[in-house]
Amino acid sequence: MEKGFLDRIEDNAAIRIWSEMKQQEKGDSLTEGYLSKLWDFAHASVTQNDLQELKEIWNGWNDEIKQLFYHNYEDLPYLLEVKVDKCLFRALVQFWNPTYSCFTFGRVDLLPTVEEYMALLRCSRVKVNKVYSRAANVLPFVKRLMNITGMSDIYGLVVFPKALGHVDEGVSDLFVQLDRGVTPVPAILAETFRSLNACRRVGEGRFVGCAQLLLSWFYSHFWRIEKSLQAEDVEWRAPWMIPDKILYRCGNFNYVPLLGIWGAGGYAPLLVLRQYRSRQFTPATKGLAQCEFSYKGVNYKKGIREISNAWKQTRRMKEFAAGPMTTLEYDQW
Image (tube, rainbow, N blue to C red; front, side, top):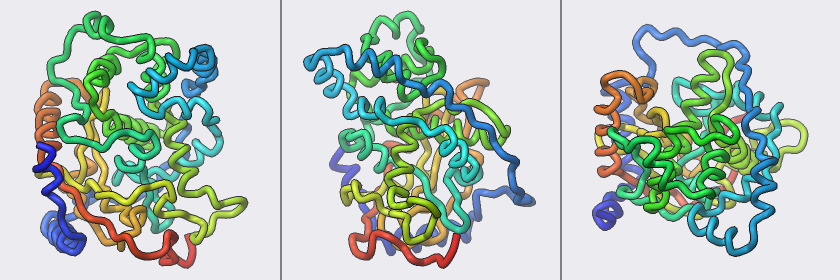
């Protein structure tokens, strides 16, 4: 499985030709007749992202327990030290574009990717047969809880803080699979994008996701900014990123579909090739805006199976290793 996965590396030039051809053939993510409009201010709450109580629990553990936690859940504890700037977070939400699942600053797109989140959490390399996928028919809630250790409570509350002090039934399925060595990053991204989409479309809501991780990602690209935002201050390729391959599409999807805890979504990494020092071009995004769905109703299980199968046909691309870390393509924002 892994050998076949690594064999599917394609050249940047070939991917650009493929993407432009698909864009011309199938069109954009926007539906025909769509009228672009500015959304009103979105009031996003991050009240559940106060992790002071969990920080006190972590500080009370001895070194042996902490090492066991690191072994099972990678570099998650550093997020306990990240302070959530509520004003900054609410301002950041205003730039979220739910049509393309990315942050849009003027003519520039930016978004957290699978590779960046894995680097921030120091996760192992993603493997197609180890990516979290919600089973269409899950075990009863009580049986899943029997498989969850006390540590898992902290993991769920940090990454998916639906209710402080409560483990959600949907999250428990992820806990069970974490013990099998699955990669949770795609699920974390799925719920991050879905939650931002919901807050932006409705105009209000509570962000259900890890605000600490999202802000850590944001700081990594804008750390040079002190007072005013200038194009040359943005680190398009974060300095902590190790050169690697970019996951850019799965199976028949011209983008990367993601299975989350409570629903599915997707994103188009080719929208943000600047983050990999690569030359930007218009990607194929047909169907991206319509790929999001919740795990309810009668047809969601079919969608889960389609995305799960697509991950077994993952494609990766090479990145450009040359060029400056900042881009000066734009004179103004």
